[in-house]
Image (cartoon, rainbow, N blue to C red; front, side, top):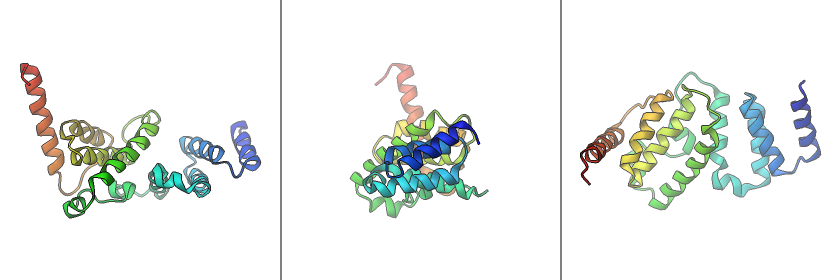
Length: 185
């Protein structure tokens, strides 16, 4: 057993009810590839502070659960964020405030992971990016969403079903680029 694991286990034993100790160790284990143990510590940490799971860590739990399943099938954005953004009737019934909150929660998780995802493909990160692009599009940020749709595909996410939002975002982005290049507004 390496020294880092011994230190980690010692801290967890010494501070079993400390949210920050459990979270720091969960993240370290996640980064080292010990996903099942990371998931167990993450769940233990959020049990100590349930407000955190409501705030943003529920997405983190879903990400680790998807990694533990390690299925060969593609993870959907709905599995990670708990809402099927490809279903127009669901989106239409979702209040704008909820979409904005979800956008911010997902951005927090993307920012946490961006520098740790070494290279593409990482299909789960791609699914997160695709969900983020959909949320940007749905909250009136269509032009910028095109970049995130493209990044999602670069990370290995392949959308199934309706891609009308993605296609419209790409079209708006191209028009904005053409206006910018021509010096128009």
